[in-house]
Image (cartoon, rainbow, N blue to C red):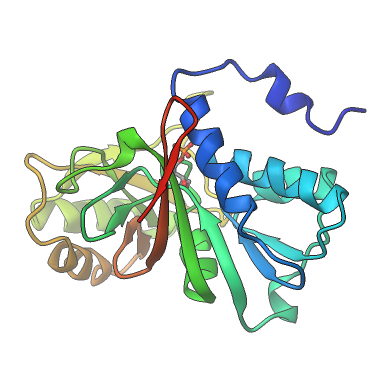
Length: 237
Ligand code: 5RP
């Protein structure tokens, strides 16, 4: 079985070249002996794919995945994997973003994995962010903000969010049921009326609501940001 059949069967999207360029550049920064957090999403996919290639060529690392999907990809590619109970820090986590602003503040969670992603990023000496150029914005808020919510509290939490002026939609799965995260929770995607002036305050207000597990805001977490372009160039900030 070809471990990479997923990549070959993916429908090429316009910005796949840019995503691949960023992912490959990040994988080339990984060094022998590192404990590496593996992000989730289509850009992180290219990172993991190239990391698998480098491991086949002799790179010796251990990884830990931020989602079941990334875990399965790494497992198929035979990256030696760690479990959370066996580690207290990571050298680096490499992950994508839905939006990143000029202060390296991000919205993540388009794939619904932001809770585990944030846990790994915050255990890491550095979070390297891999994005295509379309993710770079002056101010956050054009894309919805994913908020992971405990199912028991879904109704109360939505009312609470709405009372604070945050309105959105419950994320649904393809079969019409509620989307479930790898943690068994729901996602409420908040849509903002205007671009955000003070995401830190929005983050605090939302995190203060009982039932909220975490938001997709990543504030003060990003280290280097590798931006990929359609022509295959990358720029590191
Ligand atoms: C998943 C994430 C992803 O990193 C984010 O959605 C970006 O994904 P992609 O690289 O596919 O555009 O936060 O929860």
